[in-house]
Image (cartoon, rainbow, N blue to C red; front, side, top):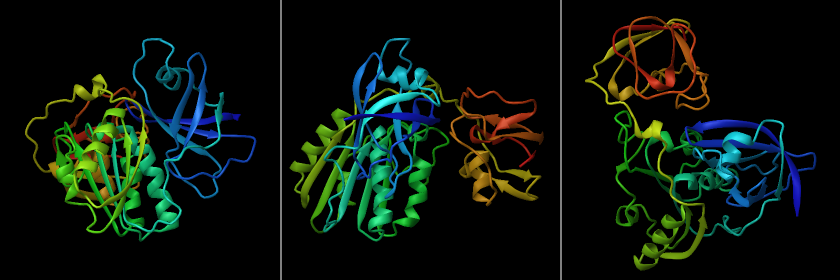
Length: 341
């Protein structure tokens, strides 16, 4: 049965991923992490989207959607990218689906995901943090690089809530600014032999979610591996998508050297190194409250005034900036700099 949902807001997570927040005049139904809503997309038809946030008493639903430039064709991607607007209405079912954590949680869990599979993973991690924060769980995720890892910050914040968890990430094409051991653990495609190093020694349940090809190949390999996997649950979430052009056109960086950075509002001066990442990441590592939304140069919220010195953009960005302002999420220092933050 369908009901009307109102689009409360949209957040661009990456150049090709958007999170959509939904409310309703009726009380929202309780759900299990991993379940989905089936939407009636105008001009397209029904499409399912996994809920990407969990709450035991939901007041708002969130879905996270990969979209591409559909050139005006009537596709679900074009709807979420161009037509869905804050305040608009859309019809969808309540939460449904059999892909979710078991009620008992009587065995360790391994969750293998790729690309938009992170939507289900995020909700599952949030549910585990509420239900059984010390449960043994292993998260194994693969994506193109940090620019396509839409919910990485939310997942990162959940690590401390799940002290018995293991997290490993594969980037098939890391950027120059992606740091091994921080943004990702392995380069190249996810390999089940590597994954097996992190499987529990006793029987476990496996959850596989992501593109159709990934789910099929991973399930086949897992069944043939001899791992002590007692049950396998799967959720296909569309096809593998190529990264958008702005990610593929990542800038080649010159040699980088340590630089002195002063955040004038905070009164903090520290030495930036290439391992510090972007100026936004550097500020956060110093405990500075640095507002942001997308972290990929799309929204413009992280822009700050560069009072003196030279900074360099590490990627093409679409957000407009004011005079003397730069996007902290997409710049690094090339000299001694002072920043109004």
